[in-house]
Image 1 (tube, rainbow, N blue to C red):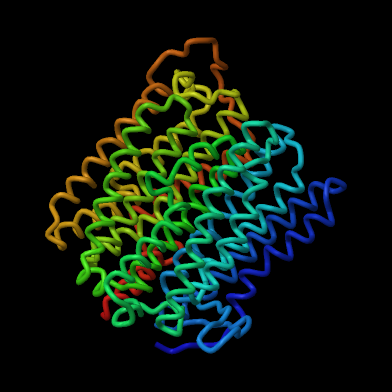
Image 2: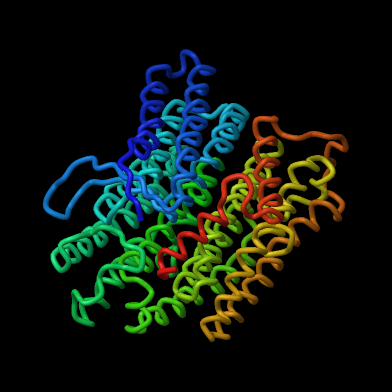
Length: 496
């Protein structure tokens, strides 16, 4: 695989850092200019990331070394197919989230908007650093920056509940960071490198007991942000944050960074061969299967819409990890595709929840009767997102879940096929009643019988991501070559 030295990965990280400085300098004095920096940075980041797609599709790798700390220990950005998948997802959805944030923050006349947009920009820089990290050390550094940058967003409302949620978020994620650092140090001591390698680099470097310890430590470290049960509780609690932050947590940055880290460990540190021979894959598969079913059952019990969506996210993150843990080509492909597809579908659902709150101040599922008559575009987009997450064709969720089910058959593990199918039925059980209430039940109180949507700054992004979920279901390689990038990543991992 040809390696090309390029400054593009660094530019992708830096563009939103520059925007963050401009946002602070502009402040409240010129709100339109402040938000213009956000939009320009998001579009520029996407253009930079998209410019790397042709190189990766041609089988090349882009690399930029920030600093050399020791032999075999670099702070280095390296863009491979899997990293590009995450980078394209984050940069694409940041454009939609930036527009949506303007409508949401202004619609509620929120306080500390400069701080909000500043932290948002820092978080996206960290996310891009995670996507393009060339090794465990670089991933750890940007992972911790993301934790710090998102704390003010979680605690944005500054109420006692928000401060408590922020502290819980820090307690979970910073502790996880210590575990990652410890495991990374031991790995470097054993191997002399932390560089990600398709198919893994740990085989033959440690005893069976040490391999088990490192695997458990790294999975727990990254699994906190991936919200694997029982280390998930910070995520539902963090729903106290503004809805654009929830969208950031669930679709663009934080939890996807956790899943990305878990998949890096499975596929690029340990590798399918070592995990299969050691039997560690089976332990992880059963563990996340419990999360899949448990989170879906808890979602059924939630009346608060954002908490229901939060448990749905936990369910789908575990589905992605289970796909990678099964180690078969189709399952890995399904897991990677679902990481991207879920981003579009879940951000749509959270955008809808925010639009409902801004327009009606309703937060509970039981309050949504008849709302589809007042907000047909918003609730129609919710229906599309819900069907996609459930896995109904022709939405993009069907394609990724199809590959996941096919992968369980390739691995000769029928029990996990049952887990995937059960999860899909439970998705329908907690999403479809919301759609039914909105469109087919009479409202419990008088509602505006006319078209009465939220701001177009909010409606246009949520409709755009809903339409993208449909387009990617019909043409999975459209827009940003997700299917081709994932196929290339799987081929590299499994050696062709």
